[in-house]
Length: 175
Image 1: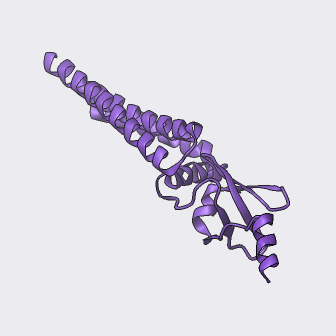
Image 2 (image 1 turned 180 degrees about the vertical axis):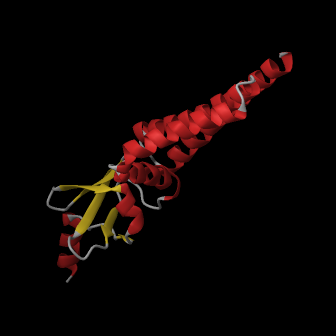
Image 3 (image 1 turned 90 degrees about the vertical axis):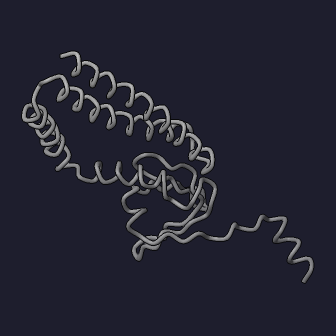
């Protein structure tokens, strides 16, 4: 029994260490990519909850609940989540895409982009990248809410910055 409690404590210490290290790494990455604090907090919380769930399962097994009992609970929890999200599969895919965009999306807030879409002109300046969507402001002031999963599925072009009115006037004066 002492070994089981010791192993559970080791799992807890490893969880705390990994959580702090991962949080520090995510914050550094967010600062480097100029990501908002709110988005960084959401991604950190999401990953921390997932790690806590895994740690709790390992602790339960080490304390003697039995692998079959814990695996039954974990599979039941995933089944309930799966049934709940089947009707809203886009929520799960947007959440996953939001985490992927946090780590690998090459565009930042303030950059001009165009999403290649044959039905609609989706171009403008990125004003926010949230966990479920990207907000794009068009030149006329309209704001587009574009789902993260579509942002990963479609080609995205980085556009050159629009010249300001003063730069345009200088160019016209030279001619």
